[in-house]
Length: 280
Image 1 (cartoon, rainbow, N blue to C red):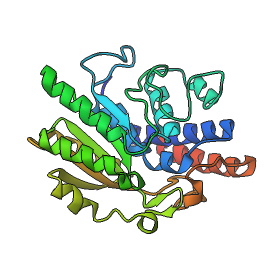
Image 2 (image 1 turned 180 degrees about the vertical axis):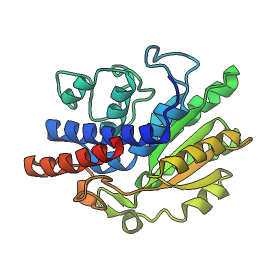
Image 3 (image 1 turned 120 degrees about the horizontal axis):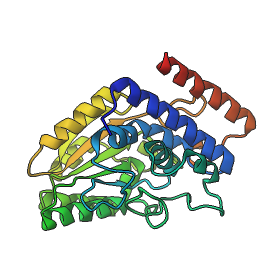
Image 4 (image 1 turned 90 degrees about the vertical axis):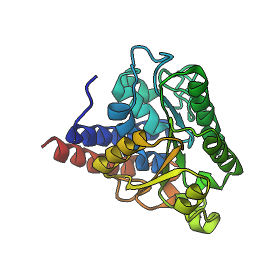
């Protein structure tokens, strides 16, 4: 598949936001806030950056992706469906006993999922392991991951960060979705993690910073990450939780609940308007 241009990437992200909200509403359960905040990153990875083939999801030479903030499957599944890993219609069975699209990623039953995650803090360790494996096997594939900023309060994150630097994993690129909110409120109040740039730099990572909703900036950062040698790369992406739905934006309460029918109608109206504008 050819890499999508900026306009088409923005449109794909907008469509995935609508699909994600649809899935959460249909299931009456899920995590919309953090899903909406990371969708521009996911879209850039799956439609432009990563070497992947939906027709061969277990290709040993494919690039790997780990959703360390594993509760945000509405975003991941919407992206995978749009990319062709499974039919979009299956998103209606999100969190249903009738299907395998569970609330956290399932690498056994869902095509395109490289790691089962959900216990926060552990996904980065898995990504480090994948990157080490590539080095040991002399493979050229790269490993990508997305962590949440609240997730960085987990100690295992920093153990993984130390290991990645020790082994000079320049084939590892990690986004941090810095939306400033988590289930219990502002990350700065629950467990302050800033200054993240200085912390990752102290762990000998190459640090890049972007607006996590600026597709052009995301692509530039990913291109820059490919040029880094001898150290892993972290891209600190400033985002808005609930991006694209006015009443969800910047609200911690939308971390893990589904909209009711009235709220869903408003969310759908807003997201459809954004899609129409991008299609114009």
